[in-house]
Length: 238
Image 1: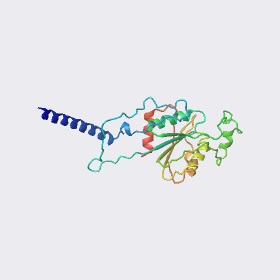
Image 2: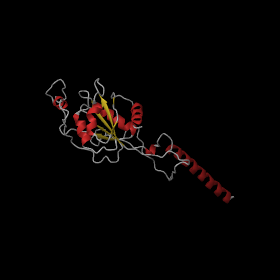
Image 3: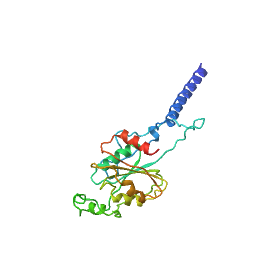
Image 4: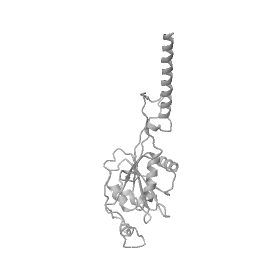
């Protein structure tokens, strides 16, 4: 009968909606964030490769509207943290690592560009009169930066990447940190190196970020996998 068919259709529709609700709720409150809630990071606008990464997905339109409520019994509250990956790269090695890290953890990306770009001669560490040698021989040196982030209030964690120079971070990183209000934020250094470790990096960076939680950093190879980077970023954020 027509009435029975109508009731059957309504029942089927409600059943489908309930299944969708359960699926989305399970994703929302599981350890893995749903795709729709993950932020995506793209290369700088002036980059030749300024296009979405191949594995990025644009949320599809839906005719359904889902309403989520915290699970009964005091379930874990969803907290959307926002991260920034800032980096200084003289030769491009650290830039590659920074892009991979930002993509792996869903963070925004910012390049620390010197007001006066470094030349190959500037980076000659065997020449005691080269620009980098002179800067690194003076811990108070603060090379000028072309531009700073407009606003970092929305970030709770700032990853700062750089190459290791003379067993520490280049002093331009101090310039960057001192130009920001990092109180209450976590600052996480990461670096690339030709062979040395982090050395006295945190000792030199600590005075430049008062009020921040300066986490012990790590040296990475530029070929580090996304899984390794993501796992490390999660561990230092705990």
